[in-house]
Length: 322
Length: 263
Image 1 (cartoon, rainbow over the protein chains, first blue to last red):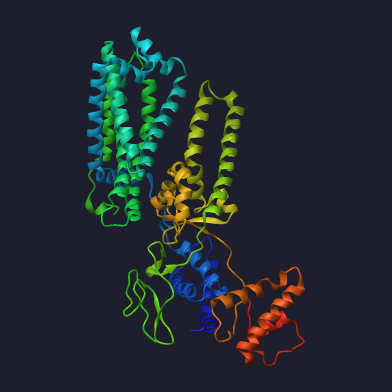
Image 2 (image 1 turned 30 degrees about the horizontal axis):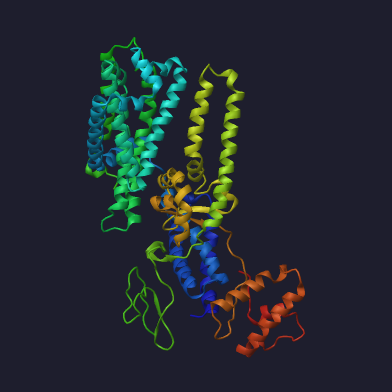
């Protein structure tokens, strides 16, 4: 088919599709079934014309017009962005638990690596307390020598509200860093897991050295368990990205990354609200001497239980989002 | 003329190796006219979409404008909180500043793209838009993902975009998106008659000339170019010149000879 004949034969169709796009601009939902069916048919024909023009008549006015038309038609008629987003209830009731459960293996690996790092840090601090002290800094060490934990400064040096916001943003930043760093072959989440484990082990070792281990455990009882869980879960989501990049299997890497990123994002977003809750607990409950250790521990276990109950909630096969 | 087969992989029987989209030519030989590469944008029915992908330059400029916007928003937030500080409880000024800056830092780009159909302020100014790998409207999830790794892309993004035919940065690869030029539809003249032997290049040149002839600063230049096109038409298809007034305006003569119609 020559160019002139191609344009002569097909232009009425393009003009009809342009008119339909113009008529339904901003109100595609209000268009009737017949209109949508017509648009879908013409869109398909426009795509074929566009592919033909791009291949045989590149750079011509018809090819450029069809390019714009194909882009506008594709944007208006296709893509998940056209769909109404699922609400929070669907996200926390189905999307998040499913994504979480699909990453249980990686979460197990993150926990195992974390425990190894804790033991490592504890051993280092026990054998060489000076190395452990380096993690805490001189200010905290002076406090330990005077028989008090550095955690009291959380509410004495700055107002609790400020501490809460700083703790929440800091923890979310750590989780986001662990997640985004996953695309660097999983090295950043590995670093986050090992560093947090090492620091916890070393801190425990040093405080035990100063006979303040029980006080530290009491301080972290209310928020520590879930906080570490969330960091590890976020890091595992980052590891999923790294795994998709390094071991994509028989799929193209880009596709493996796209698939992994969906689950990983759902897991990360499911963790974020809990960080805010934990920041409030860490500032208002954890350092408070009025709250008994038993209550703090109960609260910590309850928070951990609530998170795990939500994340491990059984999802019936017919309710999956796959 | 042989049959035409289109597909993702090599499907052309008796076609040259590596050919993925072939057209039978007049002398019976297979000629490759387009190659569907792995990086191609494949739309409905796996039809190749030849979308106007935005390159490193326009995207960097859009990002630069966006970072200026980010700076303005962050400054406005701090100033706004300080102005209202007298009505806030003690300590809450710092809370609003810390929380607000954190949300602006991580949410400025993502929120704009989610609410603006894949466009931020910089992209609107440069007429760019984020689309899915299939050319459709992306959902909120992919838009969030591509912006979460923005800090990493400040380092590796330009290099990745430079070597990728679809100019995708890390975030685009992760989210399955790309950025395209979102231009107005073309209304350039379309030729109704084409001299034999003229290819797409000649057609594109003449159509572009006719679209811009009226806006050329020097009418003499337009006339000279039109004369050259008329000479070419006279050589390739003298029958198209029949009935034309030799004294007429050359640009109008080109339009008449090729029956150019406004698009």
